[in-house]
Length: 265
Image (cartoon, rainbow, N blue to C red; front, side):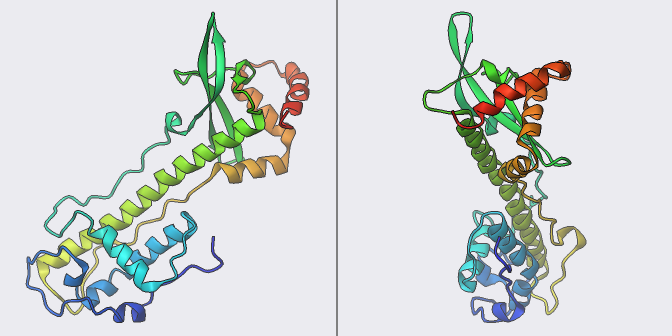
């Protein structure tokens, strides 16, 4: 995250010459140059939300004002104009473990070697990563039943699973946030198009600035887990792998064995 977010100001937008002075009611708006200066300024909250997502969640540099404004308008008007009626707020899809797991090796079932996968989930209340080893049907399996691919250590497998999760979670959350911003802008513009240009374009409550969905990455949780206790994270792995009835007395011995495998050997 940058030390200070880029902010577009009213003065920045006032420099825009790609505007219209007058537009009749019901005139179709299909490019940003058909918006008035006041209408563009009435989008400033959404523009700055767009910048926030790009800088904090995509880690992008949006410091060039003209570029970021053109990119925002390009997003809003992509395959769209003000005659489109359906601009409802989007839904955030649930996390699908099938999209966030990685194949890390195989398991032996009878005489067959079947693919084995490693996924994860997060426990925000404890800042923990909970590992989820799975078979090809996405059913949980003991982690120690996996034969890791040649040259792949457990530490590397965990890291690959984290990278996969974070990439998919970034895509899920950023797509949702950009859709929220885009559709709020489109609803405003569609209403302005019906009324024609105004000295004071209004913004209805349902079209107000959307709340940005936070992006929570597994890498941050994983680092925090390691700082708190490597041993505790091993306990969490074993509880998830073995289930709630995993004998507590066997945990201590198992941890001793597992701790060595975390060294990458």
